[in-house]
Length: 99
Image (tube, rainbow, N blue to C red):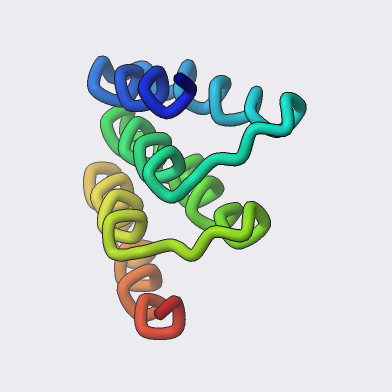
C-alpha cells in the first residue's frame, strides 16, 4: 500500500507527500524496500529537490537496503535538474563501491 502511494505521489510530483509516507513506515514497523526508496528518490527528482533525494539515497543502508542503479540514476537526475553536476558525479563515482 505504501509503495503504491509513494509511486503515485512521485508520478504526480508530490515529493513532500512521498517523503511523508516513507517516514511513516518506520514507526509502524513497515520496512521500505528498494523500489519504495527509488520511488521516493524519483519524487524528489520530479520536485527538483536534490538534497532530499540524496538524503533518501544515503539512508538506504540504514534500512538494510543497497542502493542500485535505479536509486543512483534517480538521485543523479535530481542533481542534474538542479544544476548540481558535481554531486551527480560523486554519485556516479561511488556506484562501483555500492555493488
